[in-house]
Amino acid sequence: MRAVSLSVLSLGLVSEAWAAPDGGAANGVADMIWNAGPMVKLVLLLLVGLSLACWGVVLVKFKLFRRAERQSEDFYEMYRQKKNFGLLYRESQLLTESYLAQVFRAGYAEWGRLTKTLETAGAAEMPLSGADEVLSTVEKAMEGAILLETRRLERFLPLLATTGNTAPFIGLFGTVWGIMTSFHHIGLKGAANLAVVAPGISEALVATAIGLFAAIPAVIFFNYFMNRIQAVQGHMHYFAGDFYTVLKREWLRRSTAISKNGTSETSAVLRTTG
Image (cartoon, rainbow, N blue to C red):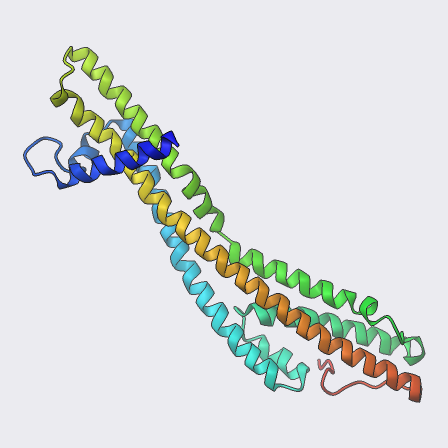
């Protein structure tokens, strides 16, 4: 709480310094930064670098989410309209940014391997019950795809969290260092009036203000993107459940056909085509 209070107070003091009329050696923020000590300047450089990196991540993520969501909407429309999943599998390979397409391809590829294995083994060895156990590999493949897509969307977001958590303290370190240096110079000069103390302290407080400037947007956008990722995860889990239900119905249909006719059928709807 003390750090937060000091940060808010520092921001107010720096705002007043920014608005101060030009009439002194350190009336402007640029003058205060220029007159700051080497350690404070190093801290400011670090904070500016973190801020620029965070804004770069924000811009990249906005573009990534926009493409991923647009392509996923296109894929879902194709999924609802297509009856031949083999054709949909080939067409979905063009949607490289779609998280739903990735989940579909993982599940359908595993389904294709499963059915090919059973067809090779023979219809007599095809399990007639326990669809959930048989299709567990398909479910695990889709869960793995969901995990990979989540990690892809979360990439570089820890930088925003790290900046939001550490930037105010980095700025506070620069402020404390600058104030220590100012008081050291005051001791050497032997003067302690407000005109001597204020310029050095205001220069040091700039570090805290820059730290807040870097941290606040980082925290806001980190929470924003994490909420969007949670929504995407819900969409992926819903789609995976729907697709799993389709495969389960197909498996039960084949099992019923085998039990009646003694032969294995391969649905044109779910046929794996080279």
